Length: 429
Image 1 (spheres, rainbow, N blue to C red):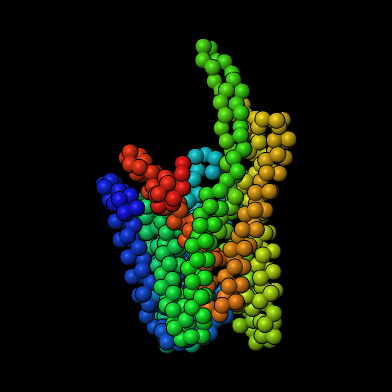
Image 2 (image 1 turned 90 degrees about the vertical axis):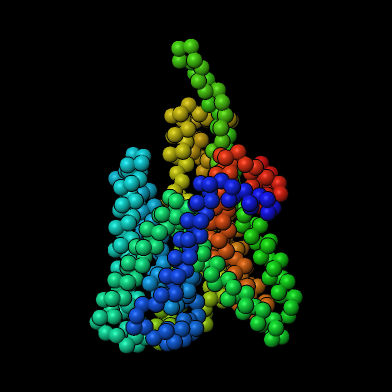
């Protein structure tokens, strides 16, 4: 195991990328502790301590606690993530953007530029909203000057993180933006682990629940890794054709359909929607009577969570994966699915396979999302929330993708694969 890890630093290029990524992570974590001047830190800490699963707790999770400290990186990369999701959805419904995406590198470069400008606009709007709330809630002694300086600081922090994430993707290992989100989530794990140890040491919770936590964490991470890598391969057969003295085609390939087609997007969308009514009940005293019925972890909350996850799993897949376009491309390239006629029958066959796979993925996502609430209610441990849900799914997904990129660098340099038996992921080729 340690010999395989030591291989990472034997390749000069890989060593530089790893060191660059570690340096960028240190810069990111330092920035999350530099607070915007003029904020009452104690009052802000008490405000977040009284939150009961509102939108601020949700955003604070993705920023690694930066929002709770109202630091320079309080907005994190959420404006960039929101802009990227918006343009991903618009690309599927706006013909101009879809045509631009099909133009190759030049078209994608234009879409990336639009995404950056949208990130700037969203960052300014979110920074102004957060600064206004800080002023209205009396969490600062500053006035108009604090409002302006806060908007500039938060917007600049988000743009810097966007730049840093792109540099990590280009010069480091893994996807930079995803890596920043993962590090932010992992930064809260030591505090949650300490909270669990304190509760067990105080005698309020049985020691057995600590063992259950460790076992369930290993099991859930293993299941997430399998589902993240799982895919259904549809065989594509290409007919032989003769051009001059050469014969083309006559080979087979596979059309992979991932089990978790939407990744973490369905859980993020569902969680964000469910935090809105909870936040409204906290802001509007006239709606406080609704809170016990929709509070986080309640029966109504869990049922709505599951329904929304199923909805967004199928909805997002319908946006990013079109069976008719796939069938058309297969037919134009001279391919066909054995036993299935080209054209509409192929599209219907792919759609039927996709729906069955999506059902498995949606059931898995719903189970992962609900599991923390069930374990937390049974044990009384708040640290059980790290076992499943959005946070762990992001950590596992980004971690697996990063290991795959490291493996590609090692294999390219003729080193032994990390994913062979006994490697980091422990699977066979």
